[in-house]
Length: 179
Figure 1 (tube, rainbow, N blue to C red):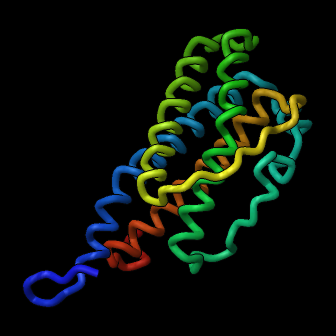
Figure 2 (cartoon, one colour; figure 1 turned 60 degrees about the vertical axis):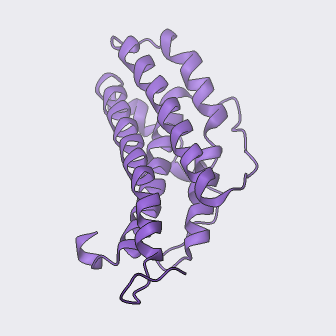
């Protein structure tokens, strides 16, 4: 705990400053995954999306996610890291399959996947600095298709983004309605 000249605790401000670049990265990660899903949805027929496995079948569904925003800082960072690490191998798979997709914009999709990999690595490095520990990865089954993996990634990137925004709001003592 650090006090400023007036005796106020400034640890939360420092913590918020450490979180800021990570929340920017997670926001970009989620934005990219949403954009990729829109690209894929625009080309594949609605019936194909109906036949896709449910989000509850994503390889990360077994991770215990808190139902409210009251989880501890350590829990939220650990969950964000676990989700992020669980996507290392699937992102490699998506990257290798993107150029062969029967989609008119497969070049753009490949480029966005590479961006996702870059932001994912950068965010992982940032979270490593915050927690200074590693977690085990979980590899998804090979039968997951490209579009389904992307929809799972979009869902999980939203969770990562939300967890880090909750932490930033706590750290900067922002009112909940402004977060």
